[in-house]
Length: 70
Image 1 (spheres, one colour):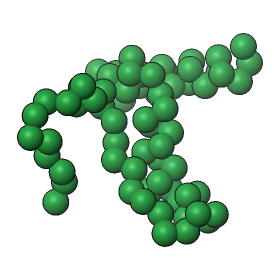
Image 2 (cartoon, one colour):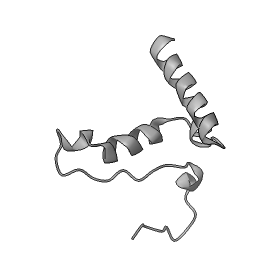
Image 3 (cartoon, one colour):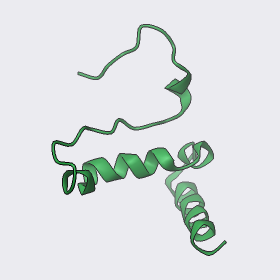
Image 4 (cartoon, helix red, strand yellow):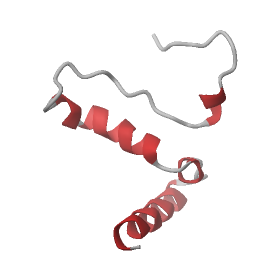
């Protein structure tokens, strides 16, 4: 059952995903169920708020290109 805060939190509109805890520090943190939400939460809010999958793909490609080559 997901946690529901008793009051509105500042992070409520950040579109963040829950990152499950890992039992193993070395290999457990490399599992997709942990890496996927971690990478998503590190994207800027402007990308996480994309209105369609096509727009999300374009924004992510542009963001990653700038991170790698600029």
